Image (cartoon, rainbow, N blue to C red; front, side, top):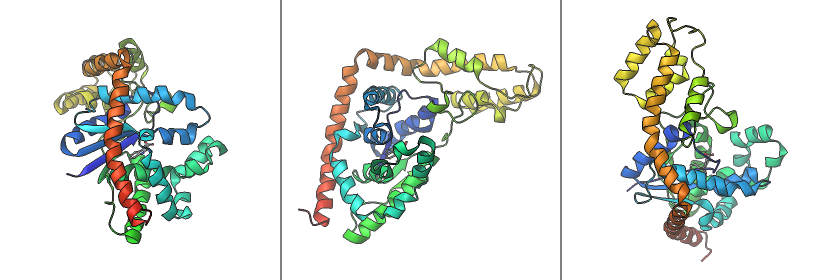
Length: 325
Ligand code: TRP
């Protein structure tokens, strides 16, 4: 059976963008593929090494959201990157064959150094995509469900795999990206939903917080009064409606917004109710995990052991072809 692998850096609580852009997709894929989902805590350290104390709590939040969002430990393997130290060994060995020029041209490296400054101009951060490559190939992943922003990393992963296989024989499959339909969910200000823009609706937000956020959400600026014809295509509220409603219902909202029969206030109220029905079971599950955090840590431990057994095999094979055994 083909294998998929995906992961996230532990950035804290997950929002609707993560749920619809990644988690729900993963939850479906775990039914069809042998699935591995990891939390990339070393990757987090590559940009946050100066504040490592916050990472642990963020790991908990991400895992709690994975599980409550539908990632099922019985159907897949999920784990923490640092629980599988063999990945670091593989990273070292793969570094030997990766030309500096390949990592230097990584767009994320350059962007992040100009956005975050010299603090991230480290050897470790430069190796970010090599480490990500190893996350994928350590379990011989065939498909990698990711957003558009990760495609350059995946391209590099494929190049590294080709070079490795050319040098040492066919050890790794070339990992292919698997893009999702809802790759980009808008935030409440209309920009991409992102923690750093402060425009996110979190899975764990209290209902009253969610309602406040929905009330604040920008809509079509040309629709001032209920009767004004709206443009749902540029409205984040309509985008959210599409996440929670049938196509038929969405067509109806679309028409009523355009005709002026539906005002933004009523539209928002309806959205809120739909969203809460959807989020309720997720929030209940999450509450259970918050009350018993040991459940999360035990699952992580178990997942780590499962992943480790597989990665150890891969590393053995790599050491063999690199004449290290
Ligand atoms: N780079 C990814 C991100 O920032 C996280 C990540 C780490 C990842 N290792 C991975 C994604 C392996 C897919 C596969 O979101």
